[in-house]
Length: 311
Image 1 (cartoon, rainbow, N blue to C red):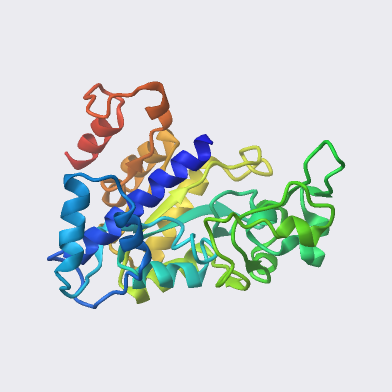
Image 2 (cartoon, rainbow, N blue to C red; image 1 turned 180 degrees about the vertical axis):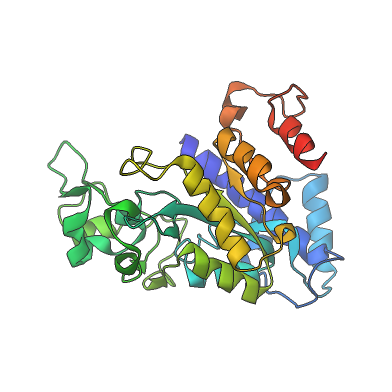
């Protein structure tokens, strides 16, 4: 139930962001297509000043423009497989001025776009391929008591092998007795209409695509789900450095990139070693569930770190 409530909150936030894009007076002049869903979600909001303002904005019928206030989280994952070329293109078309690539690494230490290092069994077709034999944990069917399970990580395979996979809508059937049933687990609030053959991307490929689409980028360095240093050599700082270096090598302006991490040391590393990119780094603070005051000015807080970076 908590997950559903959180999901509804995220969807409402997305609707507000996209509707705000329609009223934006700045940003790229290329028109965008929001589609019917944002208006449907706004209509479903409780009555109040915010709903009224958004409905008035929608009724103005002015040309819709992209906005940095609208961020494509994993692309457009309610309709397209997350972190795929199709999902990123859809997000840009619907007005996202910034698009996110969650960044993790493969067995050969190449960076790729995945929400989690170990989600290939629910977000791709890996269990239907020969690469299933390389998964950290093989598919185990539902036995009447224990749910069906598997664990397939990007660190189980190389980049070349990763690129042979196809993205699907994130989900799994815990009562499945076969791989096919397990993969058929898309939640009812998503759709499989466009979700069968998503094109997976390396981090470098995402940079090329997002530049082509004319959007800004917010890569999130994901927490490794393997012991670090990986294979005794690849340290967390190597991981954080590699992410920034791929933007530098591609010639992407620091003003176009908002690197982010839940690991405070990653943010400090960017600020100290790559200050031009670090000044726009975002510390994702998970302490909100503990009642953190977002307006705190205490040293060590996310806001304090941001100010120090900008000083």
